[in-house]
Amino acid sequence: STDQEAQVERAKAAVEQAKAELEENRRQLRLAESLVAGGVVSGDDADAAKSRVRISEAALRQEQADLGVFEAYLQNTYIKAPFTGVVIKKMAEVGESVTPIPPGVNVSTSSGAIVAMADFDTLEVEVDVNESHIAKLHDAHPAEVTVEAFPERKLQAVLRQIIPSTDRTKATVMVKVTILE
Image 1 (cartoon, rainbow, N blue to C red):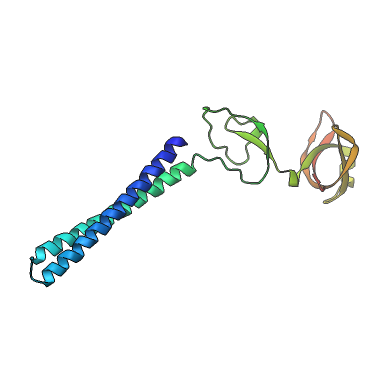
Image 2: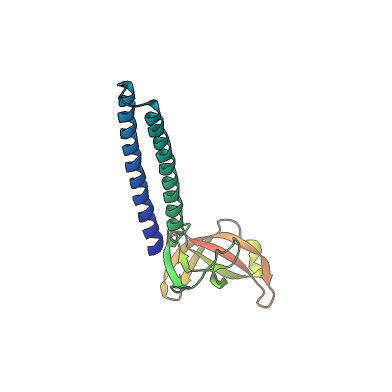
């Protein structure tokens, strides 16, 4: 992003220069108007000064627009997540080209992913449940989750979603369980 940052700085300097030129042309217009009022110079000098002021105003607007464009380009160099979380896996290296991932595409298998993130405030677990037990489950059904890393710790959870497809090879249905703690 250093090249974009440099472009923004150049554009800021150009805006400052355009402001200074506009102020100078306004000063010259005031001087020309006072000289015309005193009969020292013709009205053409004041008209020329007015034109220089209008040109300077247009130049300032142009430089401000250019600054806006370069600031937008700089913003496009930043990577922002749509939620607060923790990076759990880096999937791209410096210099690699990446493309946006359309909604619904599996991020973990997509070549456009830069990192995988987790929001630890809303963790959930995917669990295979024997299809004979699915009829007993309902929304917000309570659950207990244990993980291999901490087998002595039982985490309270609730059923969030039953995935409406069956794994025929294992005779199971996947459910998503939200961890409450």
